[in-house]
Length: 84
Length: 333
Ligand code: SF4
Image 1 (tube, protein in one colour):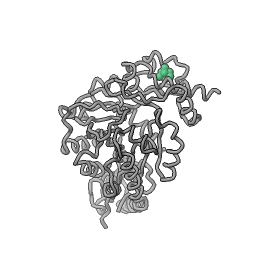
Image 2: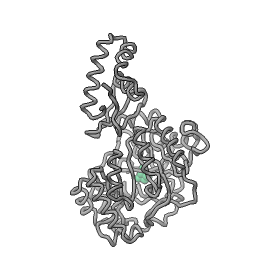
Image 3: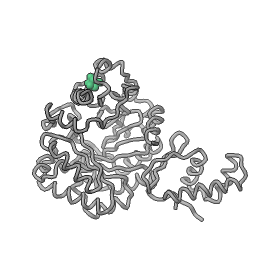
Image 4: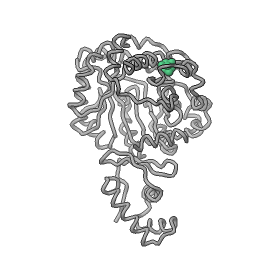
């Protein structure tokens, strides 16, 4: 599965956190540290399947746990219209 | 409310999260109240504008408004807007809308422009055309508003209230509401960017100003805790502006060049400009007239207007004083 940030989604990394405008609600949200890390990887077009590994290394969790967190994060952002 | 939090963080850290980019000073209208001083300048090329956008994004800018002059006079405008959307800015377009037809409106929607902001001076063709100095402009702009609405583009109407149109505020507000547009009224006319006031002849006079300001009685939020916030602003702190020739300004209303992007990077100018350092260092205690003013809690002083009206960044702003006095009277019975 290829997961991409949708065209026209406004976002900026400011002081280590991503601020993203949710397109459906036109609402500005601030991602938490982990979310910002994942969003940064998605912005840099890192393939989704490589992200759990990077998450696990960064936050010293098991790849399985990182995979679950990633799946949850992606589900939320898809629902909000941020990811395709 | 994330925008407020973002404003506080970026103001403290001097990150230009908000910016305005003037693409041109050329215009197809001749508005009587226009503040732009038209000089012969070499506008930034498409490639230069894109480079500015890259630099603004890298500096942390998220909210970007494109303005002019009339930006749709530039042939590359859609290319530049598309680039800005690709760079993930929240893009707002400030236009007189004269050149926007149905195809342009659909393009703006497809580009996912956040909002189009346009001035609607009147619902009467004669009044509108008199303000713009262009016969037929009312018909064209109303057509553009219909096209934008049909295309599903968010629209904001901005109306400077002047002697010729203040009486229309209610009907303009009703028009905006009926069409799902947001609306903003402003009784302040800025002098021209060279300080000349020849464009302020339509400014509403004292008795009428009271009537206009009182319509909004109670709708203001001022800081009692931080009164300096009422008389200073975020220009040059978390707000930047860029002129058509690449001058970096603290704000379009504060036309003091901090440096030119044709000579230095945005980052270098933003970090080291003495002009920006001076503006960032302004303190309430240095504003002698304002520091002791009894109306400070009702004031919306703009440092740029103070400079243009009185020639001093440290002085009062006559238009802010007039409005603050009315608000004070209004709130204190
Ligand atoms: S009302 Fe005038 S003098 Fe008082 S704070 Fe505002 S600008 Fe300054």
